[in-house]
Image (cartoon, rainbow over all chains, first blue to last red; front, side, top):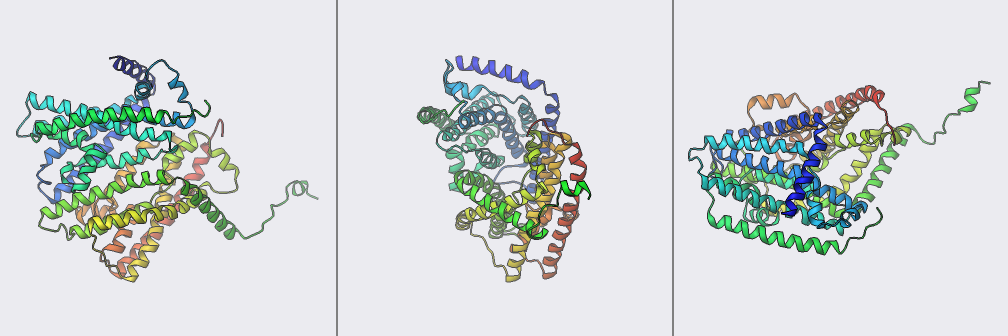
Length: 261
Length: 284
């Protein structure tokens, strides 16, 4: 609970800070619009050649795109800025200031930054998702909506773990700026249901970089494809990953030597 | 005697202008090779992120091809594999100093120091990225080998195609460098270049052959692509090696590249001329 209160305080302060830069809001809307337009054009190109992709109709893939944009917004608003700040702090030695605070360092390092304008993508994602769901012939009931919410939450925590594990590597390897490019590139695979990828890649995108859990599984919940087994697996894997991340973080912390701050 | 001439003697010139510039490129390239070889993990992270993109397109289009009975628009999965594996090399060649780099350079005032040198700043960028290319290509070879084993590309280029490809990838590098430098210079006016750059990338994605071979796009897209430089940076080099272009089309493609290099060079010079007047820095 304490962690959530802390998150909320930092979120409010960060949001207030960023609200000062209103031009950035307009720029973000422009950027989100370009990304949305490109995404739609790509779907149009593919479905220009085929009526369905591996059993997914255009509308269902629109739903996947909605979840992808939504999750991208969550990552861009909170996860990525925090991890970038952490990476810089470790490199510069200013991470000392986090360690000396009377609060859990992992919690602090995970909540202190927010890029509020990136939340535009969360809104865009929900709008795309809303349009897609309203077009689905099957429609969705409360059970599916609940499964979707749970899957989304589990997916977001797994993505957070992935980022934190890689960023923790900064305790050993100092220059890991490229983790951003790495994730950005791999994350694009989530625009398509992971079931289209060949086996080795599907497994990597599920357990190595948990994009399947973050995007495909929530989308499956909305398109009546999700089984209870998958959801249970997602929950188990998320818990395991959170525990491992916690252990790895503490292990990495032992290797931190603040140069000078 | 004219006092100004005494106070400021002409700098000694040891070598000719072209030779001097060549030496600068070589020095920048060597420096960059030495630097980049140190950051192997970082470079591999970068490359895996980069390779994800064509693998995604390859899987999507192979799926489409299989659903359409084995090929789509004349492309079989094996031909898509060849297209997108060559894509990865072309993409590596296409990594250039981005407008975001210019944004930082101008916002933070780093440009002040560069302006003191008797050298057009873009020369430094060009040189150091040429050096990085050698490191990147070296590290790309194992990735290409793995991709070849996984996706079984069908590739049988003629010697002429290989020769044209070897030239065309450098043409692509120059065109993309010059275009992105011009875009980067926009930060002299705007400080934030994000949306303009993303628009460029979106146009490039759809109109260059980066997302999909252009022959699979609607006719009007192909016509539009023929009028723009993007095709010279992705579609043409790739198809020079994997497609079945006629000798005439190969030479025509190189001609188009030359044209866009000239347009890009003039554009960069003109934009620079107006942009540099707007530069002011608080610290360097």
